[in-house]
Amino acid sequence: MTMRSTRSTVTFSNPFTLPEYPGELPAGDYEVLVEEELIQGLSFEAYRRTATYLTVRGRGRHVGRFELRAISDSDLKQALSRDQGAAKKNDHSDAALFPQEDGT
Picture 1 (cartoon, rainbow, N blue to C red):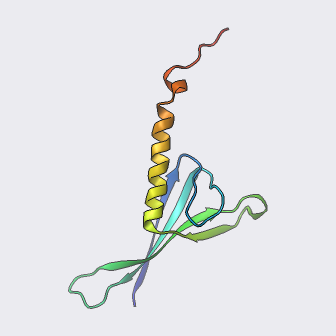
Picture 2 (tube, rainbow, N blue to C red):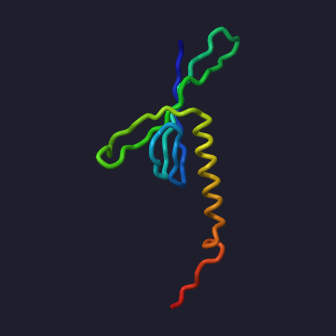
Picture 3 (cartoon, one colour):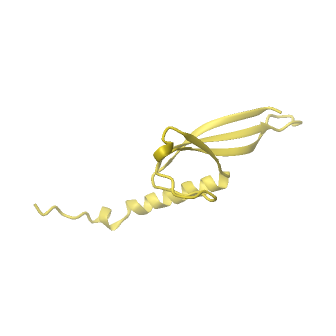
């Protein structure tokens, strides 16, 4: 069985949560690792996704450590979609539309 792995980076502008994982993760860049296997017996090359992982940096006493958290592709897409929605909402806040004047 032939396997391949691809890495990419996703950016969260706001803190976010993931299903089945406790706590909130901070905003920032996260590496995504996708593992796929070659589908045998086809007349063309095609791969099937077998796993997706989000690389999470340790905090507190775990600084310097990394954890690969298994995540479904749909959960990752939903988390990114929620983050984009929150970023758009923040861009249109009253404070951004009507900044306070400096009284000095």
